Length: 210
Ligand SMILES: Cc1ncc(COP(=O)(O)OP(=O)(O)O)c(N)n1
Ligand SMILES: Cc1nc(C(=O)O)sc1CCOP(=O)(O)O
Ligand SMILES: [Mg+2]
Image 1: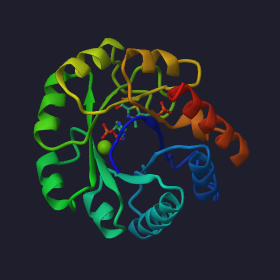
Image 2: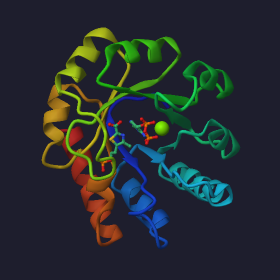
Image 3: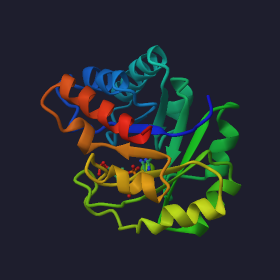
Image 4: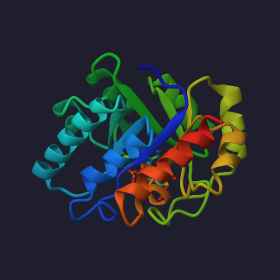
């Protein structure tokens, strides 16, 4: 499946604790998210493997793609659809070489066009820029101007992912600036129940395709 535009939901271990991971992820997929990233910073390899496997099955049921954050080995072990790597997560070229053909490789580029060019050269399938707004999930993330989305579009034809504090209130500004995918944690998953997660996902998807 090739990348076009859509909602990119990212999991969070705190927001999705207490058995919320699977029902909330199913809700986000029912709402129309096309990419789901498993982002878990713990070292509990057995649980990570089990959760990633369940999420891969869930994504397949809904025609979405599971991306594993940081961990190429886990992505290979559960036959995920791809991996997302940041600037300190290892070599993109090596990850590209290890992944099967057709697997997605995403790269964090912050607000830096040189990082974006290097990621494309290394074989990335999408370029992630941010953070655009204050992020409750990652409060220390460095700010990026909206203009980086336009500038990246001048340099590359790869899909551009916008991340960091993305909400239903600011989504339109990111889309207008050139974002192809909106990557969202808190504004999707900080919800009281799965029905609310689905409603929010649907609202993002409608905005993206309007
Ligand atoms: C879609 C997307 N964009 C950016 C990031 C951030 O990656 P990274 O800089 O490696 O930070 P961590 O997420 O690993 O804390 C991402 N995960 N996904
Ligand atoms: C994981 C991550 N990376 C960022 C970056 O700027 O690279 S911002 C971020 C957190 C995104 O969560 P929320 O939607 O809750 O702000
Ligand atoms: Mg990372």
